[in-house]
Amino acid sequence: MESTLDIFVKAIFSENMIFAYFLGMCSYLAVSKTVKTAVGLGAAVIFVLTVTVPVNFLLENYVLKAGALEWLGAEYAELDLSFLSFIMYIAVVASIVQLVEMLVEKFAPALYGALGIFLPLIAVNCSILGGALFMQERQYSTILDATAFSLGSGIGWFIAIVAIAAIREKLRYSNVPGPLRGLGITFIVTGLMGMAFMSFMGIKYGEEAPKEEIETVTTMIETNKENNIN
Image (cartoon, rainbow, N blue to C red):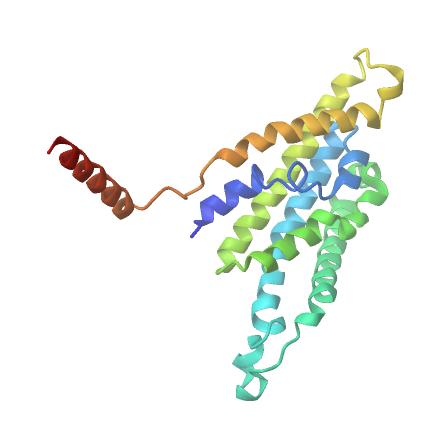
């Protein structure tokens, strides 16, 4: 069973929302022209993911899935509201995004203007809804695991958009062939970064063999050696 730290690290690197699943590409491409706007949107995505996934975890486990309402009484034990999952997840995401939009407009009006329409569009960002659906599919056992996954996913998305923004700022002064300028070279760089992040998939996160299994294998090897000598 994966530890909370394993879930967190995997969400950042080997299961990165951009480079592993290519979720949230519209905002990733549109708002990554400068590092400043990329940092702002990345921070907003971290906040929205970290809040919405745990809230949706509670909804899933205490309201929506079959038997979740048993805490209200035995007569509700067979009630299954899982067909409402998509609607409820989207409602939670839209509510949190509205809160973030109000806060950014109040305390960072310059950033609010720079992000433009893409700030409210976080509500339909694939990575946000994808986080909730991954949480539902993987059936995390505790809210701490769900929170670690959401925070890691947000940080992974933040790293991806800030990295591509920094590269795009440098590419403006590079001799890029005409047909590849703009989104063309951005797609190529994104593909190369995705290939680089694939290297993290080879890391074993807490999957090493248990100590008892290692001792058993060692004993078998020693026994075979003795038999071969005899």
